[in-house]
Amino acid sequence: MMVSFAGVVRPVVDRVHVSLRHASVPGVSALYGGVRPGIEVDAFYALLDHPVAESALAARMVYFAFDPDAEEARGLVARVNGSWELTGAGRERVLGVDRVFTEAAERLWSYRPIATMPGGEAVATAAGLIGRLLEAGQASGGPVFRALTPVWEPPGGSAAQRLVARLEALRHYRADAHRAAWGAAGLTVAEVQALGPGAVKDGIEAETNRLDDQVYEVLDEGERWLLLGALGALADGLSAP
Image 1 (tube, helix red, strand yellow):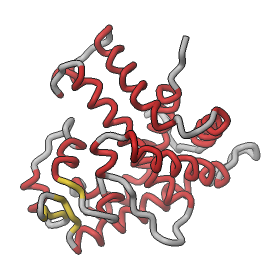
Image 2 (cartoon, helix red, strand yellow):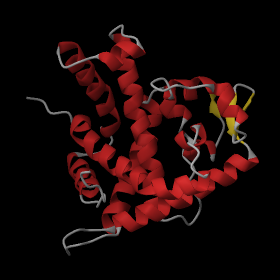
Image 3 (spheres, one colour):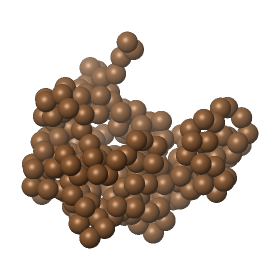
């Protein structure tokens, strides 16, 4: 049976990403005074680098309740000539979010309860390999991925800071693949969200993996093992409730 590398690595990428976001909740909540963050946090690594087309951000938010007028009224992002941009206040706010994310990442990923865990070495390995994936994805990625890359990376930033931003961007590549797969199957957003187990859902997942696998073709087999091992070695701090 042919095994999809994208299908294997996807839950590992998601675990690392979700655990980092989870660890950052207290710090982000403090920055926002308990108010729920908006789209400036969903796309800030791109917005710090360049304006993002309205259509691309709407597609990014297709699974969620998204009110552009309400987002703009918060004063952190603004629509300018068909694109979203950060306001001055928005830029200051998301730079604070970046600091929270980076501090959480460095705390989690440097944790080595036993000597065989690689810590920072794995972070640097994963960041480098994912950087190559993002470059390769410019040729094969979907519209949201292309709109949300390149990501902002400050000069002199740590490997952990780079990995946080690059992981976020890599997940957009798969998200585009998933939207393309269920769209080709003739489903609406509501229909795909309501899908239960079965042939239709399995088919969409298989097509998503097929499209997502394209970006990993830039890596040879050994590099794929390195990426999977590096991400899998990172401590996540998650625990069952």
